Length: 301
Image (tube, rainbow, N blue to C red):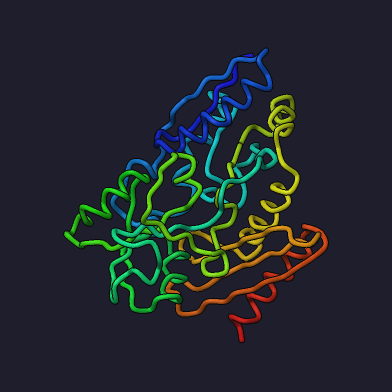
């Protein structure tokens, strides 16, 4: 059986898809696997900030349509970029082991947050990162940035299109690791300092819901704890009603036999921000509901 795997064409998207493709080839040598690059709406306009372009579907609509038409049988995404629910007729496979979920500050000079000069210019495409960063360093000036990882790192040293000189940029650690990009000028935010995006570092492997044979194959390579963590983080995203216009973060992990879910949610301008930490013996809907109620209570109060 020939299985076509759809992906965006960026270096990171291709690295992630090759990882999935290689794992499937190794486990199921009786099948053939082929990668298909699909250009999405979000790839065609790299100038506007994400929150001005629309929903998270910008990076997935064309790929999901190809899945529905059966032009491709599998799609690989960064799960953090995915809407809370897939399109009708599609399903996400169970989560594989996640990469480092943390956010990273890449500095032009230095390797600590305190190495940024007073009033430094920092660029990020995420409101979640922007507002949490300003909570840590209110003196900073935050600027929007678009483009793939290489483009963003280049802009750190060459400046933004309007001539603004940058002192730092914030990216996901998972992307740096998957592309094997190493730098001495990095500061990894502890998840206590900056709560990551829901399912950051997790691959979103998507397929048609009726393709049961392929679903069974992909799920055989999943990780139970990663699946529970993804369920909690994306469950919070779905229940709280978040989108790319709002700062929203969720980070779940297992500690001493219990699941911990840390969350952040705020308004579009970052004027109201609420943080919550809840714990439970199991990764279930009750734990998500507890986090959502805590956040809503704070914002309403």
